[in-house]
Length: 299
Image (cartoon, rainbow, N blue to C red):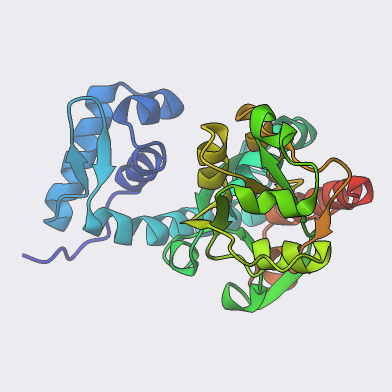
């Protein structure tokens, strides 16, 4: 039988927390409930909808296809209700803000700056999710998106943040063998297939032909760094967003002082400035200010 009543608001709050954290226990801690109570609320919602929203595993839960499809609508509805309550009855105790960013930006830029934002805005609960492909952003709810490349595919309004600087990196042993740009061609070159600016762009800037180059194709800079860290070949750092992962993998510059400007930029994307909620406006102002500082330090 199809449900005829709107589900309980508490069921939806519990579902959103459990889906976001992928854990009944973490959702329980966040909502000041017991894990069995969270499980009971989820079962009640699933019974009401007639569909399983979670797949239960030994020590974790994951969203089913129905659960993934339902989550953005639930988050949007809760945010709308929160905004209406704040507007009519004063500031809520805590406002949630949903930001989705490409993984390397979230890891390399937002993670180190997370506490800076939350300390400046203690009344905003910042929830970060990541994605890489256009589809990742299309099927998830967020107040703001941080993307790389053409922003028009993700939203109608956007702010340009900063670009990237490329330079070759490898393990210290491999880097020590690179004395000229042509020496790069003696090693496998890890190439991220989705970027416009890659090894051919670097070859052009360094004025080498690149004939005979051996490419190993990967889907992300983080994967390229992991392979380079194991001595598989030479990766391209994409500073500043890639700085933490390059350090974590123990990678060093192969040609100190050599850096090539990229072709694309990170953008903050949203439906329109008039529709931004108060916490989203605060985050936008904060990120633009931090981005200006970051860009000023870039080579």
